Length: 371
Length: 252
Image 1 (cartoon, one colour):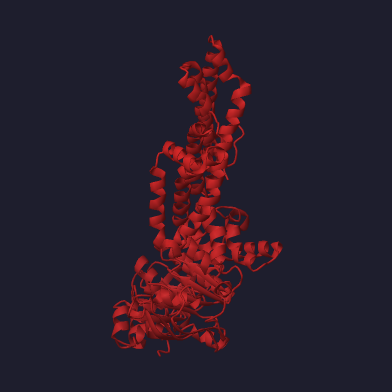
Image 2 (cartoon, one colour):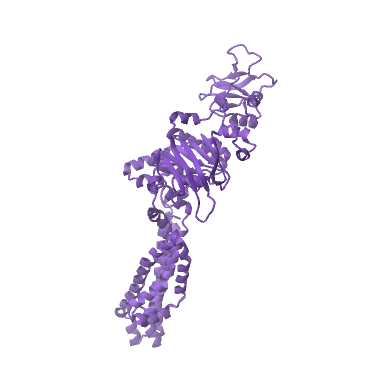
């Protein structure tokens, strides 16, 4: 594994080794079909991790997801939830312990937003006050003001808002596990991007074990601590961190599936904070050298303009990217603003270093994996 | 929802303004016919037929026939429709609905007379005949109403841990109610009209003065009683429409 591209899976290793969900030798053969839709699948989902299930349509990824909460009953094999064999327990009660979010959202149109979120807590017999406070808490969590939205009906919400409520409803009874079937698949690209960011933010707070079906590789890479790539008949072609899947496809199928955009996609996994940044000289602080970029700052220490950038006669426009961003973000603003160099700023807006196009390209070329 | 602007009519009045038309037309039309009749020179036969002490019991019989038969239809057709809408019944669904269509196609007049020979004359037989005549709309609408519920909602409900029964009661039926109510409205209107035929097997109703006055050639009395039946049918249809609006408004 490349040392520059480290994956968030490490944090899940720290949080615990035991798999939250385990499929053991699970097969599904539909009636009147000779060949199984999923054959002899073994899959372990570590606690607190987001695992994205991806594959071409018809590969059985949704079937696999639905076998986890037994919306589809496996023909053979065992399903373990937190170590407990749930293959034969009451399926309805099992599902109340597992959050479920689908692409069509499926908010009940005859119930208010609050009542939609409250469905599972009420089935579990929570008292009224606990349900009400949980609904408000969840609406806050997904960024919707409870007083504005609690009593509205689903049809009064935009698609993006509906899916926020869908996620909140999935989280309602605080289940340890969430199953999500292309939840952002039917949402416009800009809103989808925002929902993904919000979803990661929510996950940082709730730390659920999440299985997330998607057909969008960018989404799988962005959200997944691990990616499970499925080939036809639910064959698990590769199960690894996004960077490994992109850098070292396990076989020809994965290579083809990951496609030619893999190098660009990997940029979004590389955090700027992991890079060696070029030193910046603050003008006036000391004598300007010729080999470092020189930046002037305002009274609060925030960057204002470039004084000098080595190798260019005219100082370029000042462009900043946050330290918490990824190299993808940096490349994006560089291309967008036609800036060969960007200032990396920390959370307080203070300059932490510079990132140059030439070094970025050179750096990636040396540290990237041979293709 | 929509806040009422004090200067203007509240939203619910503006939205439902069209519902005012029917009762106004019915009241004006019926009053017109009755006032016209009152100004005419009526002979003793006509006077007896239009006397409230005679008409009122016939009116109540008409209502009783309509309501009783519709209630029986609801009690029988709703559960059958729910059962037919279950996936397990998919195979017999089409056949059963086709049989219902066949029953529907039989002329009510013939069914009433035939049943009277099979089951005897009287109100019970009339109600059975009315049930047969208005069974299909309720059955079909129940099945259709339940089948048109978005499968994603059922999947969401099951995925959240609702049992099949909870899904039916809390999601499917509430969402199918507007279509089911529309079916019941059709049954009511069918029944209130068909109930005028009950007189031929001795079950009374407003068909009695109509047919006897028709037989005796008293056009004025026929016009007046027919107007009452028509008004009753329109009002029942209107009530059904209001009910649809009420149950549909929440879901829209």
